[in-house]
Length: 306
Image (cartoon, rainbow, N blue to C red; front, side, top):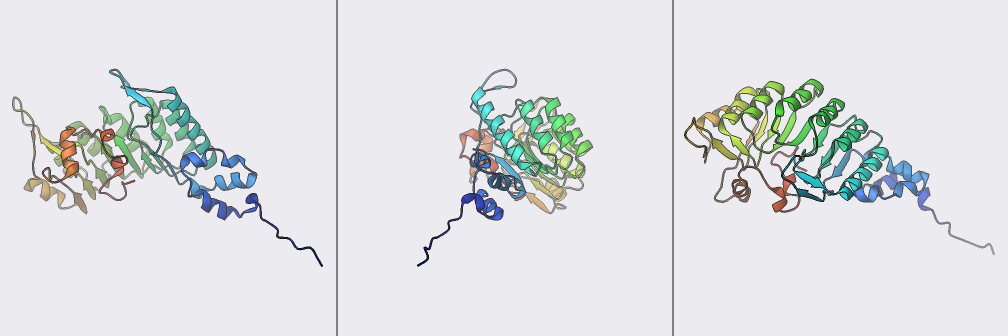
């Protein structure tokens, strides 16, 4: 009688498509822990573009303390080392395939880390970078110059927006979608109108919004299709010596100007809406760390939600 046996298949002999399917269920930490070094077949699967359309670092946060001087945060060295390691491995495996890059709002990226990333993600189309404390003007401008295909950006409110918006205007010809996580004043609005006149989608949710700035945006951004001011703290700033006041409801002028938009998303229900209450409590500058994890990712505009 012939001896029978069952031939078992080795992991490294699995079809690449099957390995990629398995690896798609892994998070960024699992993908960068060394599975690419198991064998050449696994490394080939780890480099598949399907795994790297999006580099989601929203589960990675810095260990930091707030300080009174710029950059207003001190980041523990171990946090920097972890981020640098994850970036180096991810960017090596992705081989330029990353189209969407997402950072946590409490992940404080340095200039060197941002520049390193920009050089290795030349095809980036969407960037979510809510914290800029440690990024200098030269660093963010250098990154934007590398991201000529950038279409969508989530960013914090910054004190001097013109230099940055000018870089987008000069380098990102397909840019059409912006979310600002912070107050929008007249300088911010005028910069948007001047530098990004073809903007189609704008979200200012959960922020302090100057009423005159809102009117300027509605008048000046003629290509705008979607505007989200849900849960905003809308303020009116009369001439001195009068003090600013909170606007409880939108007037006819604003509603008429907004009627041309495909979507005008609003919520000013302070009595019944938890997010409206939180925006008021935080005086228009949301302290997201106080709230449920992941709450900062929400947006009424589906293309901006994470």
